Amino acid sequence: MELLYALENIRTPFLDKLMALVTNLGGETVFIAAAIIVFWCISKKCGYYMMTVGFAGTIINQFLKLWFRIPRPWVKDPNFTIVESARAEATGYSFPSGHTQNAFATLGAPAKYTKSTVLRIVLVLLIVLTAFSRMYVGVHTPLDVGVSLGIGLVLMFVLYPFFRDMDEKPKSIYILFAVFIVLAGAFVTFVELYHFPADLDTGNYASGLKNAYMILFCAIGLLLVFHLDRKYINFPTEAVWWAQIIKVVVGLGFTVGIKAALKAPLLALFGGHSVAHGVRYFIVILFAGLIWPLTFKFFAKLGRK
Image: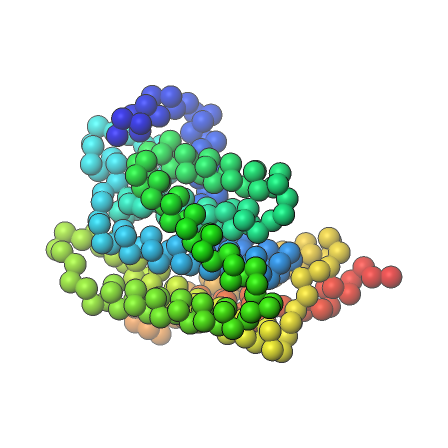
């Protein structure tokens, strides 16, 4: 807590706003948008890599949160204050840091994948800044952030060879995604069946259950997208810059719209159970990975002479 108190003492209104902005780099929305844009417009390999690092990190992160159940810094020490704008998303348990974990998927995977030294340095600095921002705003301790940095580094390096050699060794991707599905299924089983103590944070449990089903169905969706695109669609990522903008803006608009529109009816269909979130993300994955990319050959032709 000494470091957090030191950071509390140097807070200013300007730094509060800046760090609140930086910390959003580790948010789910930024991760999803970045992964989709890379997948559609830059590199399918890197897109798959980002999503796998992100989803695998979420499984580990949520498991550790529910297993150790460490409270937030201001809960452990009521005299400690946080930047209030960060409170809304800082629900549930503290250890480890989910935003720092997400930053490795959003920024770390592209940093490992890119051949540009300058871009790599910028992305790594943004990861460090995101991790620092979680401590500055007061929602995580150095241990929370440090463990997430370690997990992110391991996932980034362990998973990279699979996607680097994806074209030459596609079977390894099938095996990787199959293992991923098994692990996600095991996490769902753990969350559903494990007898947690009576003082369990119900909000964190609900979040863990939601994420468990989301990751399981996303893993199944990724496997289907990889297989069907490789065998039948093989969509291009190239297009002139203005066609790329149209492709992204319209595609993300449809994706966000579908994600929002399906929430209420699926929750009603499944009686409010978290499996509804998994099915919703499965449909979103299929749209973003298979349906919308059917238009990409059209976009690739735009602007050609």
